[in-house]
Length: 77
Image (cartoon, rainbow, N blue to C red):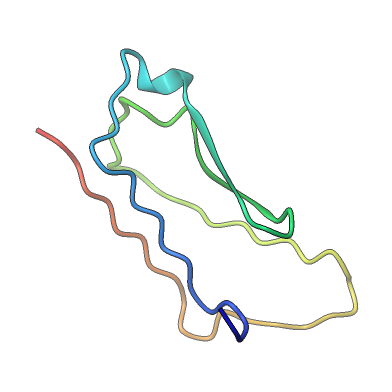
């Protein structure tokens, strides 16, 4: 695929496990870049405050998330 990556979407379809709190899910790209998708997150209520943390590896760089961020959660019954 030519061009720079602008969006990555991961869908875990019908994930099941006897104890979801045991799971850590890590996505690793072809260049070794890593995204921790989930860690010890199963079985808890999503109703509370969520936080997003960003860290720049080089202090002199500048950037922003100009339009904020969005979290979409789908639950099971």
